[in-house]
Image 1 (cartoon, rainbow, N blue to C red):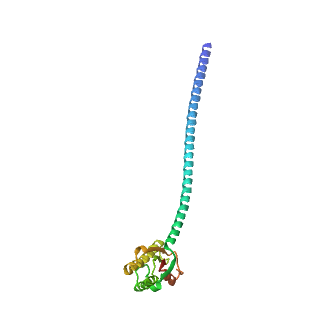
Image 2: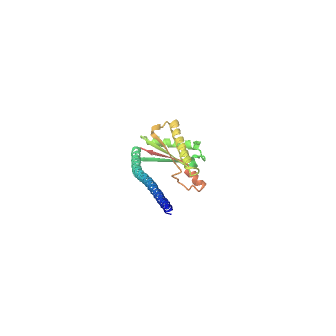
Image 3: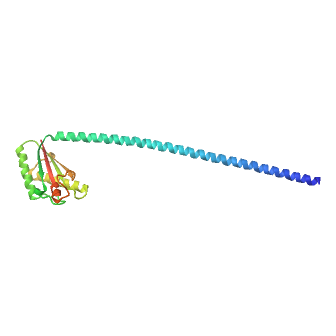
Amino acid sequence: MKKHQKIFIFAIATLVIFISSQSCATKKFVRTEVGTVDQQVKDVKTAVDENTKTIQAHEEKLASLGSLITQQGSELKNVETSLEEVRKTAQGKLILKEVLKNDEVKFAFDKAELTAEAKARLDEFVQKLIELDRGLYLEIQGHTDNTGPDSWNMRLGKMRAEAVRDYLYKQHHLPLHRMEVISLGSSVPVADNNSREGRAANRRVEILVYE
């Protein structure tokens, strides 16, 4: 009986030792895993903090860039205004304005060719310049109605103004450096574009004469 008791006690002791050793191993494993997870969390937090700093730096750069663009835009407007003032000063005083109206010079729809009527009007205009007998500067503006896209109207207005400039140069030998061609497209109408008559009136060339 005692022998059996000793065996039983030994077995119990062995079981307790085994369980204790397993418990220690489990605790050690848990501590290791928890430490690994903690380190991973720290690494993720560090990465997030770095990304946050990077994003903030980018936002600050964008804000600075936006301010710079706004500042440069304001400076550019000031420069454009100054250039316009210089341009007007260089042109001098407006002394004559000639308008080649569509009902007189017959600009065809989407066309820039000068008709015989347009050339005759320009011949009369040159006689006025001769009578003025002074140094002059011509600004030749091309205008259109609002039919079609703005890009085409700007191009068409320039083509009409260039047709007038080329005739004045080739036929009457007006110096090219005394003439400037610009297009205003459909941006400055003189009549309602909702009617056929109004659109015809807006198809025109204006010649501004400065001394």
